[in-house]
Amino acid sequence: GLETFTRFLKTEFSEENIEFWIACEDFKKSKDPQQIIHKAKAIYEKFIQNDAPQEVNLDFHTKEIITRSITQPTLHSFDAAQSRVYQLMEQDSYTRFLKSDIYLDLIEGRPQRPTNLRRRSRSFTYNEFQDVKSDVAIWL
Image 1: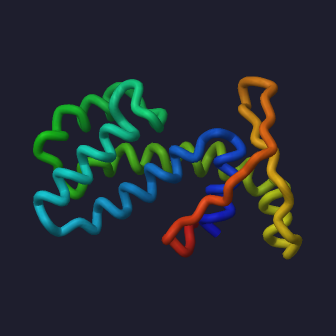
Image 2: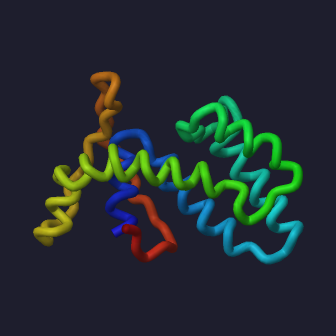
């Protein structure tokens, strides 16, 4: 499920992708215009703007469109970015997830084991892991 995939993304230091996707799903449920503005700004500052704390990998054109429209956001302001991030996860992270020990443990019903966090571009491991909780029950 989503929680297991999120746990896997954390091992790759790319959990910002699923967190962005979840934030966009939550954003699209907004009804109040002030809430839309507030949530859009929060998503932009956390995931989109240059040097954002959890900046997602987006092309210049997509970022520019969002930046220009952030003062008057709509429920579809992040659709292109969300779609791009979904494609990146589907084509890259998800294929590795299906081959991972985390996934194999899940489908074989084995208890969760400690997770080594590895940055793909460096030889870095970290054994401390805090489980990620999410209110979304399923994904994919």
